[in-house]
Amino acid sequence: MNTIKTMLLMTLLGALMVVCGGAVGGQEGATIMLMMALVMNFISYWFSDSMVLKAYNAQPIERAQAPELYDLVAKLAQRAQLPMPKVCVINSNVPNAFATGRNASHAAVAVTTGIMQALNYDELSGVLAHELSHIKHHDTLISTVAATMATFISYIAHMAQWAMIFGGGRSNRDDNGGALGALFAIIVAPFAAMLIQMAISRSREYEADKSGGEICGNPLYLARALEKIDDYARNSRMLQGATTSTAHMFIINPLKGSKVSFASLFSTHPSTEERVERLRQQAGEMRLPAR
Image 1: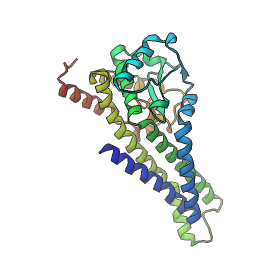
Image 2: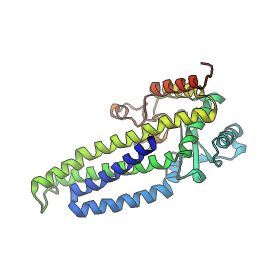
Image 3: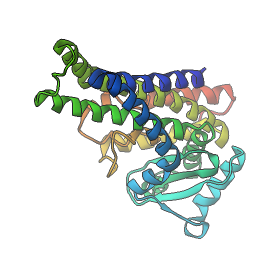
Image 4: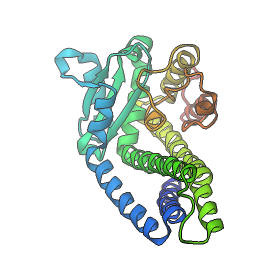
């Protein structure tokens, strides 16, 4: 059901791009936006993993550099019936992690040095299992494409805003229609895109939590890890270099440490409390001790 919901939301996001283009530039604008959507999806598919890893300076490692981490990823990947992903480390004291890659054969798991220090072995296994679940269910590709389209819609909104300021809102078409179209592109489209992206990300986080709990063998490992990471995020600084366009990729929203309340109100992540409660219920269904 969640997969169907995600595909419908992705379709809606693509349609919103076309409508946004049409509102600003008529039929020609809609056609351009449709072509841009196809180009962006192509670029996201082939290059999203390398772009994101480079943006956070995530360095690939070999087993000799961090044998415990490397072996844990290998063990969990085997349990999840996945190829061994690339293992990367981000030099940051902020505990967090993410996965990226267009498919299981071209995937990477990145963790910060802070998360390796903050969590014990079991808790780290819960986090890594969650990220491997994203890879297994192709969430890394879906969320990246969604974020790319949502970001581009925001750019179009800024362009339309400047066009109106300098008189571009008036066109050969009916002035009122052109103005209304520009207002739609400036106000409604970016907000709708953000809500759609948020809905896609949140539904996938719940699924990754559930599947991650199964992969690591105990959902409570992940529940405890989420509580620790969330507490740090609330009471410390945000992850350096974190942006709204990539925040959805992390296990906990890396912008929580930001003073920007808007980012927290419209988070791409469900509340940690709700996620932890679901994991505890899952542990109960698996008849695991509550510890």
